[in-house]
Length: 386
Ligand code: FAD
Ligand code: DHB
Image (tube, rainbow, N blue to C red; front, side):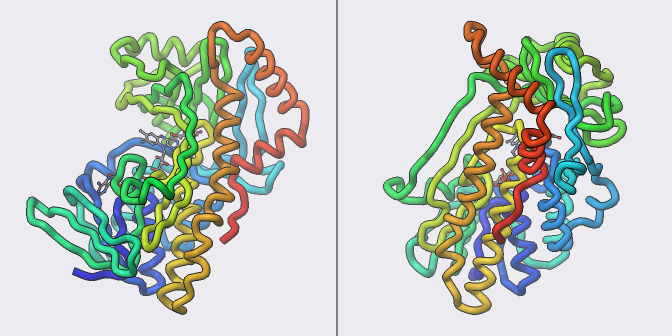
């Protein structure tokens, strides 16, 4: 087969790119390793920056999001036994929206299938070839049968463990990385959220976050050990820890439980020849600032614009600047996610200095509009370059 853009991965990055290209009349084929039901039920992120909502709207993907998304004008920070509201709307004029990533993915899959353009689930052994030439190829197996696709461009949107980043020559890639001495245990519980807005808590026992998916479904996270054994966290211990750290919590049936690893990671550059990386394929942020999915969407805005000017005008200028434009934002978001993580987690039992610095910074935040504004501007999302 043959297409203009071969897209590896049907996560938010790959599916949004497919949709934005389709609106420009550009042809693509999407290859996804997993099944449709798997990608539509995978529970992950849930918070959209206002710019992400606007981007989804421009791409025609916001019909259900507008009905079911939960807009939030503020959030709360809890420390030293008290909660303090940060009024995002008053500080920035912008807001964020809670809408589960799997709902975003469902809407994108439905939109893709409606275009009639190809989206292949269950693509096995996807491999990239000839990426430094202007005729790159993808090969894979569909139900055991070998397939080949000639492309003008390949978009590597296959997440952190996909083959695209691995296909870049190691000598041109620079990796910047930081790991953290903790992870998050996340649960989804059939219980009303304890407060209408998100609550981020810094506590001597460790971080906790109360978020939601609806008026009846709570999403709750707690800091735990990096390779925590979930068997050590029976329900009673989870609820106890959440209650202690968040001040109060509504209990309910736990319908999902999982661990989220914490790392900061950037691979530079994000382009080699005709291969472009977007989203988690190129970078990972710790989840504290809720930036993973938003950053994937921001990359795709730039990539869609670059590919549109290439296919429509034959202009490669934006393709050449793709990596540099994305990395400007990525590093600011990396810095913010690292900062939010450092502000709210317990790092070591021995170090008595760091907790004092955290408490001083939190106290400064709640008393300084300038400091709150800095947090709020980044939380609602920095302006786009493209
Ligand atoms: P992905 O969503 O990972 O999509 C990549 C796609 O490529 C997947 O569908 C995958 O199946 C497919 N793929 C992989 N390998 C191949 C292959 N060989 N061939 C074909 N297809 C392939 N962010 C937050 O902000 N808050 C959170 O609470 C949060 N929780 C998370 C929890 C987990 C367990 C994980 C993994 C991530 C979480 N994130 C969170 C991050 C956020 O979900 C990601 O940043 C976001 O999914 C990035 O989108 P993406 O499209 O780049 O990658
Ligand atoms: C959610 C996850 C986050 O990491 C965050 O900072 C805010 C919200 C969520 O899953 O809703």
